[in-house]
Image (tube, rainbow, N blue to C red; front, side, top):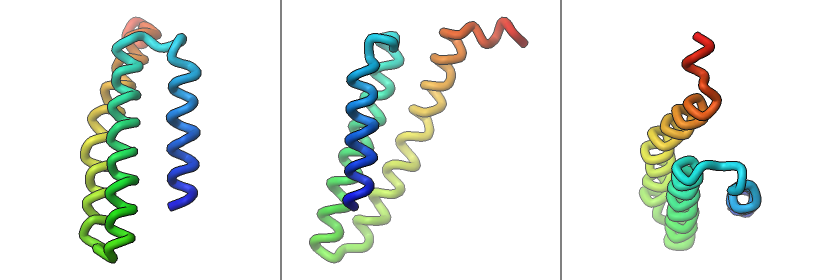
Length: 88
């Protein structure tokens, strides 16, 4: 769990430090992922403390199910910003 929290901290700080380079829509999507990951980390810790493996699984599913659509939206926004569709 220590490494997950460290990685989350790096992700969180990176997005905050670099938000000046992100459009407001793009930054909002990164914030959504940030929120989902933090909630899952907390849920995982509670599950670990209570020895509840179902909470561990729920935390994993939360990250997978909620971040994948946000990631897809981030990709779309970046491609739009880079005018990717014009190069096709």
